[in-house]
Image 1: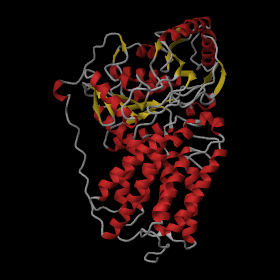
Image 2: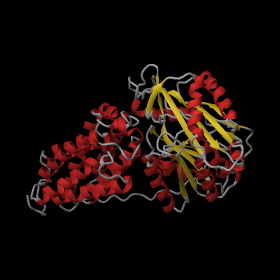
Image 3: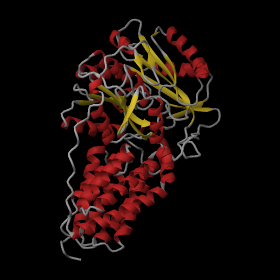
Image 4: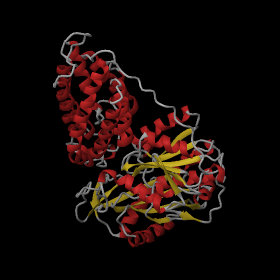
Length: 587
């Protein structure tokens, strides 16, 4: 159980404050994460790790000479926002570009992808290297769908060493992707982890059993079996990985290995397991080079361990063994050229000032309704946080409720500030959407942020919003969600509730319903659709590897969306100027 915290909602921020205070010689804090205390030399490719917190020493613990230039830090088990990744990327760029690397999760792909686009618009070359090492999460024929787990550490280290040696941008990307292609991991769990403020673990393993194929975000294993002895577990892990060995052409393969503890497995236990792992690999004709046994990628207080193997060639072997000096990982003696003292604290170019456009009274009236609706949704989601978290923990990482609470609270604060300046509904929803995405992080954060922005673009400032404006805004929100998330009906995501909502809303407006009537009718359709997701098996996102386990439980994203849409319908029924039918000026 995670026992030491002040406010569970600010656990990550409090952790970062303490981490930076403990290691000022290595790191300094920037918006979105941490970077090296002393900037690297000009012309060096910057390597940035990232992901949710809860995995220390990954990811922020390996920022330093010989390893990462910076780390983007999300909420516990939640992707950092695009703003966070962009901020850290800009802070570490030394003129040669930024290579982000992270595990293969939908939220990370979306947010880091958006950050790359923004950096490249600024003239900073950027690229994402996505790690896919977890053999339990998808078959070998679908390697691109596999999760990134402890193989992250190998890919990060190799890419960072290459950048430190002076590799070009393209060569850093090449060697990182090469390391990923040769890395395989398999893990087991003996008990689940507990989020700060919660008194129950995200999942439980029955006495005398273990979960095989766990994720590192609190996800349970994809299957269960009897708890083995240490030697039997070593054989399960070694056999599972050797069966997935990549073709290298080497007569006597050389690998590096990580036997990783997940947070609550003692080092002594790991050494017992490693004794058999090393023997089994030798008997299989595999030579182990510079192995690591310990906690490198954890999952809060999860009890369990994992084995990672990377099949080496001379280049990978050299880079793996290059020196590094970071708060949590040291190897060899580091002598690395850093920035000149004169440019250590040089300022980044200032962002352009935002121009506030005051809306006419009609637009301000609509903006006030939008803010009232956001407040109602935030209150609702706060009250449903634990329930949504439990739904998410069935086959995911249990962070959905907390993410929705953080995102909606941030959206309300930003909307209040915007509406006080006299802006219209579009500007309010842009501010709310950006704040939601920045504070919620993860897949839901970026999707809700994009949806709010797109919806707001279709609300007029010069007159009261009508029913057809609501239908157009909802359609734009759906298009943005599907463009970013690439989910379709039947994938068991919030799209399964949003599509019926939009279709019903359009139909009701076409039939002459008022805005309020159409919205409430469509919200009921979304509720029915969300409930029906219990029958589906997820085909995308973190729940996909545990598809069977999720059958019988509705999708948390679809559920929270339906709840919010119904609460907005209640606000509209309170009298708001959005009750007209589809023609301007008609009530």
